[in-house]
Image (cartoon, rainbow, N blue to C red; front, side, top):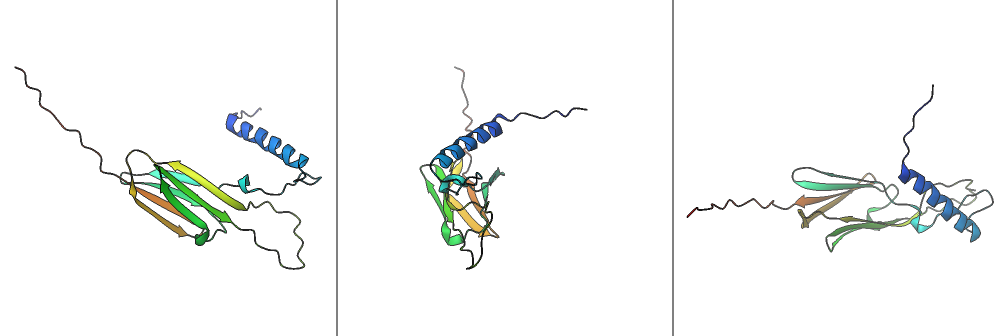
Length: 151
């Protein structure tokens, strides 16, 4: 019996992009002979979940090992910008790290605010490594009925 798999062009494009960047970093001496590359600031971006209900929009970002002081949330030009840095912890003296797959460095995510978002009513909270930003929806403009007279 054969299995049908769905082709995802975005995943394929991401794999190609990773191979190209790895080849460039290897040529620049940023990867070792086994193909393990040093992380760069652009190597990681927090995973997010964007949702809405009748009264607000919500963006949740996974930020493990990032302190609240290293996160910045800004509303600018109808965009919500979440930026920050995850700092690499120093290994204790005498410890040899054999493999590190965690990503460190700065990150920046930008989200365009919908037309009905109230940029003045933005709240952010940080708990258990998850940043939650809520943006209230502005009062919807109610349609105005205009009576048309027939003369």
